[in-house]
Amino acid sequence: MSGIFITFEGADGCGKTTQIKLLDEYLRGKGYKTLLTREPGAKGLGTKLREILLNYHGEVSPTCESFLFLADRAQHIDCIIKPALEKGVIVLCDRHTDSTVAYQGYGRGLDLDEIYHLNKIATNGLKPDLTILLDVDLKTSQTRVGKEKDRMESAGIEFFERVRKGFLEIAKQEPERVKVINSGETINNIHSKIVKLIQNKIECNKFLI
Ligand code: TYD
Image (cartoon, rainbow, N blue to C red):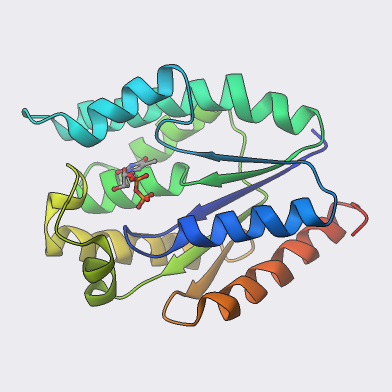
């Protein structure tokens, strides 16, 4: 596959949506073909799954929740991400496999080995070339999320402490792939750091900048 697969991860309110858009504009400005996408719910069937995942008000078991995220991922990989990578596109994805490890594994307490295994099935073994993890302290993230919370954002402070710990643990285990950036810095500083990381990755993949 000739494209590059870049994912953005972090707890709710970490600022990744702002950064992924800035990076997309930057790369397009340099003439690259990009695809800006997200999980859950890139488009089509995914948007239906997103609606359930974020707005369903009845009881949802953690296992059911995981399978819904994984179903969305399988569809996303097969129908959107892989075809784009095959065309040489740089795919920028707002959340992916690490969110399931952090939220459903560390957050909800599901077995981590099982989550890794299910992620592998959902992605058919495709892994991001680079993951930007925006690390945010809980006070900042809770303020940024605000009062109108969706189903996931309503999970409570202890849950988000576990999620943050989970993300940092993933970064410790896979330092080559996952690069941690402190989301407390200014938007411009964070953007510059991300651009450097992406340029390195593009050079490694023998793209011309
Ligand atoms: P979204 O509105 O996209 O949040 P954000 O802008 O912070 O990315 O909502 C996605 C929510 O779903 C978010 O709370 C994280 C959660 N999530 C999981 O719990 N597991 C997953 O595998 C994924 C992809 C997301």
